[in-house]
Image (cartoon, rainbow, N blue to C red; front, top):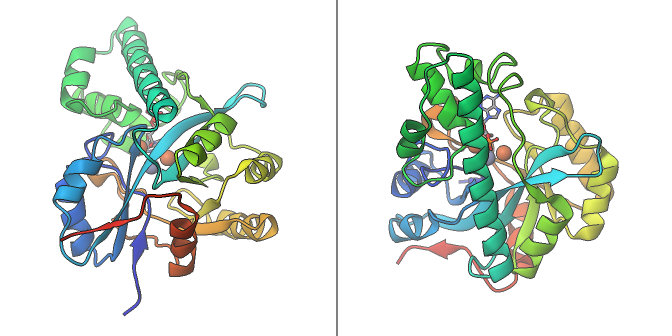
Length: 286
Ligand code: AMP
Ligand code: FE
Ligand code: FE
Ligand code: ZN
């Protein structure tokens, strides 16, 4: 049977709805052989996922870093997946802590904007429900659903809500700095959903070429937010730049409609990631 590899999934450590043990169990249900845990700006789910790892599943420990390209005018946010880095590397750990704090500031301000317009959402309630995980816009989306203003997360991300009207920037990590930090911590950097234009502005290919020179290892091509044409484009760009290509679900539990394992990564690309990592290796149970 083919090896099934999904290298992008979220838990309650950020804006997913499965706990880390639930995620690894769901991975077995989804017939995955390899799963990466990649919560936004945190490694807080790693220990619980590792402890609960079922037999036969290999876990790649990672995170999705909130980055920004400051070369554009205005600056453009983007996500980098970091795999197999040392979570105790001080500079990287400090930067993750800083961006988590920036998320709190942005979330609180977003709620203040909503409340100023008479919308009944509560920051203490949103924060309490995030239960210590990194707070993201999906948590605010849930508050809008509870308030009866929208029915789905997708609706909450429409321009009149979190997509534009109530979208505030957060103080993200400079993307070149993020690539350097991931690499210095022994990790491997992959650009998550680089052409997801439906989420907002995307960066030019010339930036991706510069990131490749700076140490970026790969591009996520097969992703729910990429059209077939965008996937073809990403693959061609990766081939041109010598980057590896991944495909992943970006599973968020019930915060998104995509199923775990809906998109997968070829074993060759996965092997390149493992080979490029410094000291850390994927973990298997037992
Ligand atoms: P944040 O990192 O807090 O800015 O929120 C970004 C997160 O919101 C992403 O990781 C997704 O989980 C989610 N998201 C972004 N755009 C959409 C969308 N159009 N529909 C549903 N979820 C989205
Ligand atoms: Fe998310
Ligand atoms: Fe992302
Ligand atoms: Zn993600």
